[in-house]
Length: 266
Image (cartoon, rainbow, N blue to C red):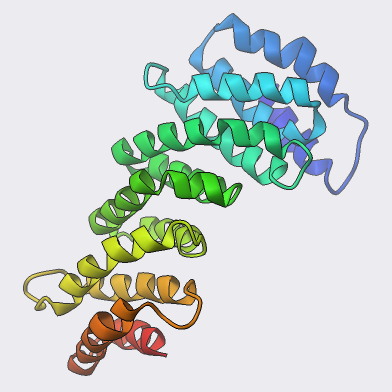
C-alpha cells in the first residue's frame, strides 16, 4: 500500500494532479504504523514514504517524520530500516531545502550527516550508492553546517575515493560528492590540503606502483576541484600540482589520462 502511494499517487501527482489528503494520510495511517514496530519492512517503508510526501504535509508533522527518520538511522536499527531512512533523508533534502520548512530540516542536518558518514564508512555496493546519493543532497542544504563537519566529511570522501577509484559507478557518485565540497568555500581549505598531497603522490607514481585507472580518476577529481576555485588558484595548485600534472600527461599514451589531464591543465 505504501509503495503504491509513494510510487504512483505521489509521483504521478506532479504531472496529473489528483485529490489526495496527504496530511490526513500521514496522521491517521503512516505515523501510527511507525509507532507500531510491526516489522522492519513496514517501518522502513513508512519512513521512506514520509520523505517522499514531506512537501505536502505541515511543519509539526514534518518534525515528527524527521525524528522517526533520525531514529531509523541509528546503528542499532535493522539494516532495512537504516537504508530506507537514508532514502527518506534524500527526499527530505530535495523537497524541503527550497521550501519554508528548511529551518526545520536544518536542525536535523548535523545528526543526519554524522549517521550517514558512519554508514558510508561501513557500506558496500548498492547501500553505498544510496548513502552517497543522500550525502551529496544533504551537503547542499546548508553550506555552513556542511563546512562545520568537514573534518569528518573530507577524509571520508578521500578514503572512499582511494578504495573505489576503479569502480566506475561508485566513482561517479563520489564525483558528485566532491563537487558539493569543491563548491563550498568552507570546505575548500581542508579539501585542498588533504587532497593535493594524495593526488601528487598518485600522479608521481610509476605504472607498476598503482593501477592505471587510478591516475585518470584522480585527474577527473582534480578538474572538479579546480573548477570550484575562485581565481586566482591557490599557490599550491600552481607551484606543486601543475608541473606534476603536465609531466604525467606528457609521459602517458593512455586516452583517459590524456583527456582528463588536458582538461585539468586547461
